[in-house]
Length: 88
Image 1 (cartoon, rainbow, N blue to C red):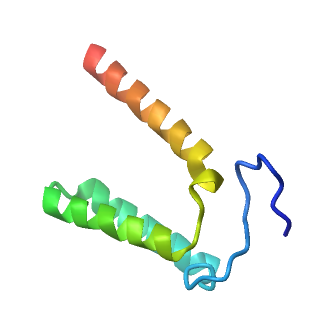
Image 2: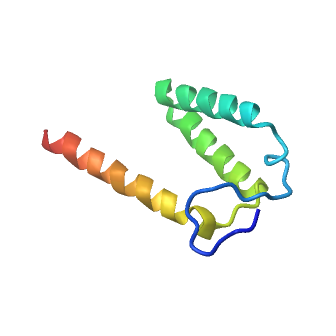
């Protein structure tokens, strides 16, 4: 699959251990880690999970330019959520 310039969403095939996993495996791991992170209040565990996420990001060989639009979108809505929770 060719990578189009400016493409924000889509699958870009890479040769990495994470890309070789099946879609079901990645989905189940994502759901489990998300539920664990949302139910945990231990800061040390959450920092460890953040470090694990950064290591997996590095292993997957994904470039920042490929995900920056999505990350900025998430950050904007997270800030909007924080402001509205504080106001109301």
